[in-house]
Image 1: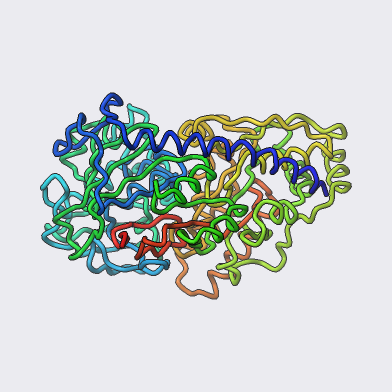
Image 2: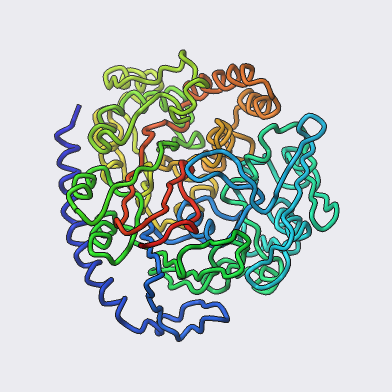
Length: 562
């Protein structure tokens, strides 16, 4: 163990954020009192770009961990984008506050036929998009078609749009043999039907994922490839309407006065500030510059508890932070080498050092909530650097090798301090002869470039579940079309088991299938589970109605300031 090294890493990391936080706070005060019209923000027609942002008593200010990649449903995978999209868009089905249980949203009811191969949704009538156009079944078909159909006129794939999350969750795009979806049929203004290739018993749960908000077809056609970027609007049916996006600073949303849920939203305005440094977020929360924030570091809990004006809020643990090892690179092509890396990392002590009581290491990719689906045979790779060295030598690398390890530039619920954690990994691996070169880049580029062949050699990433089933963790990471960031690594037996689990209704049978999956993934060691966390959030005590979702982000329509 090298806890002394990790402690020094954490101490060094801790100095700079405090300085940065003070600077950020000073800048925040300055900027909030200045006319920012020179930044040329994108604004809605109702909010001219040259109008400074006015903070009223009814404004709620949210401190996000970073800037969205875009505001285009179906074309993002990151939590910062989901946070904003959750406010602008509704989905067919949503989750009850604080749970993974389904409740109606734009669809009021749904039913299956043919053993789960056909799903029909009855839609809510009288709902309008923020631009005044009607929500109906044709609007749903339009959105799904652009996500699913590579030939959609309105998918604008020639502009670089990939809709990767659709492929990750539903196997493939229209025309590919892997595509789960076979057809989308409009059956009248308020009814839409999805026809699948094979039974998928939790299809409603999957389509309820935060990625699949329904956007205005009229707005998409008008903005074309610019839709959802700072250069264009974002138009949904949700509690808040897009007002402006000041790149590098904030997104401003206004109350939707015609929201279909009576009495919501409770705030007149929602401002989402982009504050990448956790220390700066806490400084601004304590100063009252922001009202609530997320993804603080475990070390900050004591500081939160000491301040009488703020309070800690905990998001239920429903995530995984992992280290990915790309088999398309030598020497990671050999499972033995990947297993040696797993043995070389003192995962239990790393979690204790960086997360304390707010993190847990298990051998399983799924969080402890799914304990009954985990195999007792999958015991993981206990810390054993001597055995790791022997394993490397047998694999043909007695003197180790060089490894590029990419870490995220932003804090996330699973890795609140990515760089010092990456430095701890590097220190551990150096002990068995692996020389680690740490790399990072802009968040949007980090997410996209890892999927470009051949991808990153090794990288840190994580996942907050999108729905309450093991499928939410497994299929988007190991299913057909979900391993572009692993050089399109394949395991045909695994693919078969994942599809079997989706088609199986009997819970006991599904448990046995997922236990087999757990055992296969342990041997393959392509995504090493490092931590399942209980993310630390915080708010001013004047903020009421916030019920954090285990899914990582939630609509804020119920939240207001007293």
